[in-house]
Figure: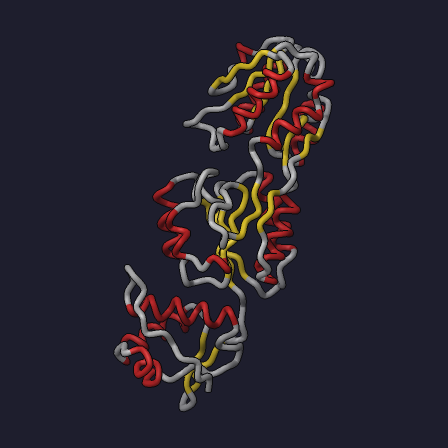
Length: 332
């Protein structure tokens, strides 16, 4: 039997049962309690922690219901052959998030399971989902709800088991992350396309604080670029088909705005890449063919998924900003 001593300190803001469940789940995930190994008896855990035997029994029942342990009559409780469980919380479902998830799943062992959820930038939902997941999974992969600071509820998760994706910051030295740079990297990408961009009189960025869940740092990057090259700059909250004018470059982030711009070009017989320019954020397979090809600024989301899978399988520390690229197509 494993003689590992179980900490007796009750977690702040938690019940004794949840404290015990969280500890044992983490211990099994880390190998402190190995696959097939016997867990301490109810009486032994009660003696070590000072928790009642009934409390320990309820904690073991929860672990059994989660298929993490099994009971053998007259012998005790044992860690089941481990199926690793991963909590993955993304912001919303889109084509490029699907690429990320598929690459993530393809690079995990077959027996590992992934619970995929979405917070849709709703802070209350984000908080609730993370709190409910804390202590129940081996690893956590989370798209933060803000690009400027980590949500406080993420402190509920062991930082060694948590990976922040896409948006966030590295202000906490213990944080593992795979992030985008929505500021300087955008300006560098635009510089890479200056020979094509400079034929347009004005760059119109379609962004809304209320409707566009995209970091505002990109606005500063585009404004700096336009100032540097004496280009006009305008910020509008959403695309309006009636506003599409020749000689302008439209930089869109939301798929719905991209559809409006492309449709307006078709209706008014304006040729993307000649009469108007179209630039979008985040690459998808559809953007390779829509409108004869939409130019994008994007990170490689399959690479993000692959690297995320590498983190959860090896638990090797990672703090990395993925490179953004300008993929030039017909629309520019």
